[in-house]
Length: 268
Ligand SMILES: C[C@](O)(CO)[C@H](O)COP(=O)(O)OP(=O)(O)OC[C@H]1O[C@@H](n2ccc(N)nc2=O)[C@H](O)[C@@H]1O
Ligand SMILES: Nc1ncnc2c1ncn2[C@@H]1O[C@H](COP(=O)(O)OP(=O)(O)OP(=O)(O)O)[C@@H](O)[C@H]1O
Image 1 (cartoon, protein in one colour):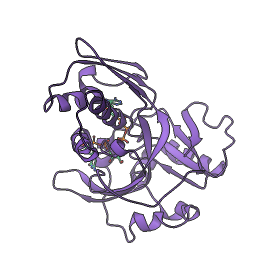
Image 2 (cartoon, rainbow, N blue to C red; image 1 turned 90 degrees about the vertical axis):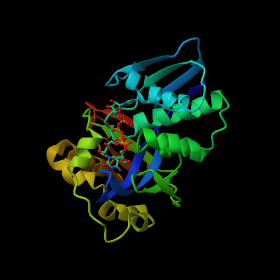
Image 3 (cartoon, protein in one colour; image 1 turned 60 degrees about the horizontal axis):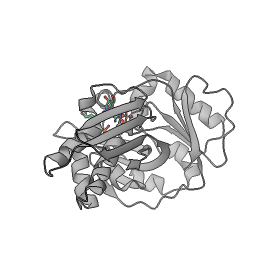
Image 4 (cartoon, rainbow, N blue to C red; image 1 turned 90 degrees about the horizontal axis):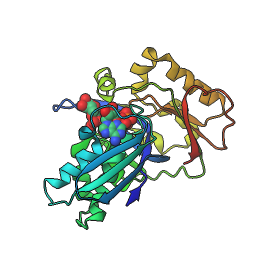
């Protein structure tokens, strides 16, 4: 069985409180985007995990695909499988790439072996693998709260817009990014801001990680400015960085602005 774990972007990200478990409560909107890895799972005589494409830090044994298999193996007598991941989504990019691989692995195993797990049961396994993971089980636009793993409906449809993702070949650790933020309760919820026309977002919809990361990595603010210069209706960093995205109402004319970076362009 073959699947294509896709990335996400965050439309706004407010970090509201530090939690007693040392994680943070947040408000954000997750939106799936078309930059994907490829993940294949086939039944085999012995368990094997291999990868190609972008190098993934850490041993294969700690890969989130392997951890997804192991988490189901504790409750089900799973036959061995061979999994191959072709990694294309940049790492340490704020695009949730590893989380998507884990969630898609859970879904593939559930389908391959007819485990009959519901969406909410798969989300429970996913939550244990990472805060972003549960989103990729249903993989549709949602408003998220708490650790980013509790979802609410939001009426937001950006189909028809174009997206440009710019990864400046700079990996930012999520844990480090959280360590440097100052949580604060917003005057107005992100949900209210997102319900207004996209043309108002530039001044109203913020990613709190930009405040702490832009002074350290000025290139991120420069990319954001360049995206607005290219005509973006809205531009922002995604998640804890380092990818910066622009949303456009027509395909942007990119020449050599981002020639040293990894770029993805497509429809939302
Ligand atoms: C920045 C976001 O991508 C926004 O969508 C996510 O909040 C990050 O989710 P993730 O990469 O799945 O993060 P996890 O693997 O769960 O956690 C990595 C580290 O980030 C910090 N962390 C993560 C999520 C959260 N709500 N509060 C936190 O403080 C913790 O230090 C944690 O040890
Ligand atoms: N399949 C995988 N793909 C990418 N990273 C993986 C994977 N499995 C484990 N990891 C580990 O997770 C770390 C970061 O993962 P990921 O790519 O999700 O971060 P990210 O792009 O910053 O996403 P986000 O901050 O939005 O969750 C890597 O440094 C790597 O050690």
